[in-house]
Length: 204
Image 1: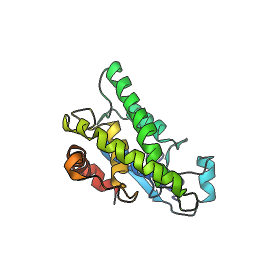
Image 2: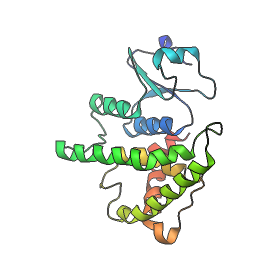
Image 3: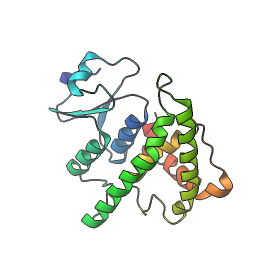
């Protein structure tokens, strides 16, 4: 791990692996154009990590005396602290609606995706087959939604897109191939996400 004592206290430090949640936070930081130090961690979890996160999971975002390890909390912290490149709309009503959409994405799609991306030691083949069918069917059914706006239910890139991009990037790893003929709006949306400079930086 990076020695935080060697880094200015005002700087953001991200401890991350190659998983979905870490990817979300990296994309979030890139979209908000924030400078941060990236410490890549893999299978081994240093003892120091337990001091920052009692659950010993990644990612962990550290700044000064604060250490955050839940992606929604990290998002709200960065959105409130750094007002540039906002990822939520301007009015309270619109912000509430988009937070609710983000909640639905996490509970309807990400729960299924994470089941398919589980470590082999925890992987349940029967449950994975059910999750794969549910996620595939849902994405195909809702594909027409992506034809009306450039981004998810919006003209501008936002928090929902930050959540969706790393999931869509991993569809092949989940064994999901969407039929182009009936999923074109979603696949075009996917291409727009992957071409963004922030996304390209998030996968380096």
